[in-house]
Every structure is written in structure tokens, then in C-alpha cells.
Length: 193
Image 1: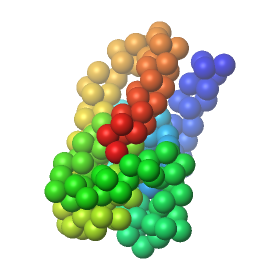
Image 2 (image 1 turned 60 degrees about the vertical axis):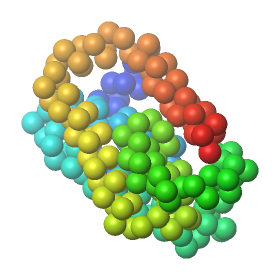
Image 3 (image 1 turned 90 degrees about the horizontal axis):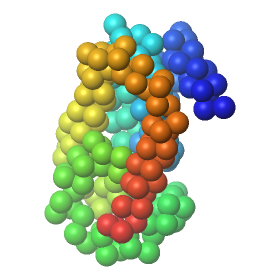
Image 4 (image 1 turned 135 degrees about the vertical axis):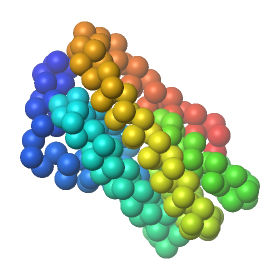
């Protein structure tokens, strides 16, 4: 089943509308969706290594714009939309304590969440709620998301075929590692916030 899903994802990654799909996924992930865009970014770069930089750029731009939407949710719609999203991820109770110190370290929080498996959407919403300075938020987001997606694209561009073979030989183990990192990011933030 996992192999079939992988093969299908690789085929979709080469589709003519793949960049649009990547844009949508990257945008939505930055504000509400739990699955990171790497799930489609990686197969897209492996399927079209000559377009690695354009793929990384689309992913970065969409993610930063989506981060702006998350900021807007936090700033304008926190009670109506933001709080329920935080409650969904079980971050609500610790939020008030965290909010008091957030702006002091906000730029670093945005950067760390933008580069790591830490749920970036939570930080985008928190940035809006706490009123983190918009230029600080945007600069941190561009640097972090750009670093993350361009680094992934560069690694896949540079070592594409060996990495593809590595992924295909160890698909099950890598899927488990991905799930552990994803869940670990949510668990980590639960204890941090």
C-alpha cells in the first residue's frame, strides 16, 4: 500500500498542475493544515530536478503568504477561528502563559518553527494574536521557510538519484521516521507552550 501511494505521489509530482497543488498545500499548511508541504516538495524535485529552484521558490512564497494568513487568523479572528484551531491541537490552556513572553523571542520562534518539524501554523497564529511586529514576522518567515525549502531542493538536486534510490529502498522506515518527526513536533510544542 505504501509503495502504491509513493508511486502515485511521484506520478502526481510530474503532473502539469503539480506547482499549483504545491502552492495550495504550502499555503494551507502554514495556517491550518497539519501535513507539511515536504510531502509533495520532495517527490516534485525528484521527478524534475532541473526545476528544483522554481519548486522551492513556489513552496517558500506560498508558505510565507500562508503564514500571513495564519497571522491574520490570530490577529483578526483569534476568538472565532484561532482559538478553536489551538484547541484542536490542544495548545489552548498553555497559551495565556506563553503569550506574555512571546514577543520577546517571537522572531526566533518564527525562525525555528519555519525550519524544523515544529508546527509552523501554531507560530503564525500566535504571532498574530500577540501582535508580533509584521516586518519581523515576515523577515523571519522568509528566511526560515526559504532556508528549509531551498536546502531540501538543493540536497535533492545535488544527490537526486542516490537519494531517490535510498528513499525507494527504505520507504517503510522513512515513512515511520516522518510520522515520528511530525508527531514529535506536535508533542514538543505541547510541552513548550
